[in-house]
Length: 330
Image (tube, rainbow, N blue to C red; front, side, top):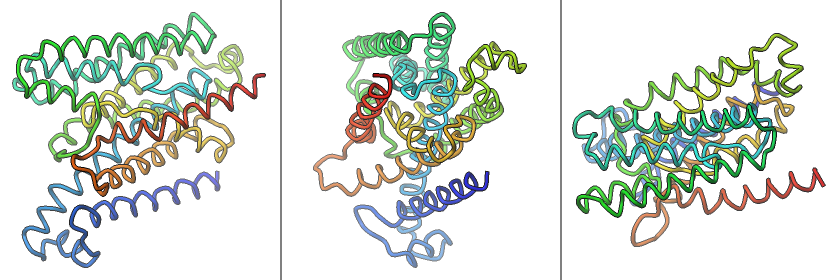
C-alpha cells in the first residue's frame, strides 16, 4: 500500500505540473511570474482573461475527461476481467456521442443546458448495460469485443444519418466537433454541468472497488466470498456510464486513453483492479492534458482535434496490448 501512495503522489505532482504548463504554454507563451500575477488578479486584464477564461478551463476539462475515461476503463477491465475492455472499444463512448448528437440535432440544448450531458449519460448507460448483459451470458472476450464493434458501428451510422439531415451548417459543425472530440473553448459552466455526474460515477466505481478485487478470483469464488454479483455489475455499469457520459458531454469522443492508462498502471499495483482505479484516472488525465498542450502548440493551419490525436497514439498502443495478450495465450 505504501507503493500505491507513492504512485498516487507522483502522478498527482505530475498532473499539477501539467496543469501549470497548460497555463504557461500556448500561441503566446507566458512566464511563470506573469501567470502567477494573472492568477492573483494583479497583472494586465488580458493576461487574467487568457488564464482564467481560456487556458485553465481547457486544461481542467482535459484532465477531468481523461480521469473519467481512465477510471471507467479500469473498472470495466476489472468487471470483465479483460485488459482490452474500455468505454471506446466497447461502444460506450460512441453511444454517448450519439446521445449528445441527438440533443444537438433536435435543438434540446436550447431548451435546457442539462440536455446534452443527460443525453450523453443515457446513451452511455444503454451501451454499458448491453455489454454487461452480454458479459453475464457469455465468457467469450471475442464476443464482447464484437458486440462493442457492433454498437460503435450502429452509433456511427446513426450519427452519419443525423449529419446527412442536419437542419443547418451550424448544427452540422457542432455534431462533427462532438464526433472528433475537443476541449477547445470549454467554459466553467460546461464543466460545472458535467462535474456532478462525473463525481457520482467516480464515487460509485470507487465504492465498488473491493468487489473488483474479489472478481479476480473468478465469479464463483467471488460469490462464495459473499459478493453480490448482480449488485456489482449494476454498480460498475452505472458508474462507468455516468463517468463516460459526463466526459463525452464535455469533450465528445476521446478514444483509447481508457485502455492504455490502466494497462500501464496495472503492473505497479500488483494487477489489482481495485488499486488501479485512482492511478488510472490520474494517468489518463495527465495524458490528455499533455496531448492538449501538444495540440495547441502544433504549427498547423487549423487546430487538430484532441480525439484525433488520442486515437493516433492510442490505436497503436491498443494493437500492441492485444498482440501481447495474444502471445500469452498462444
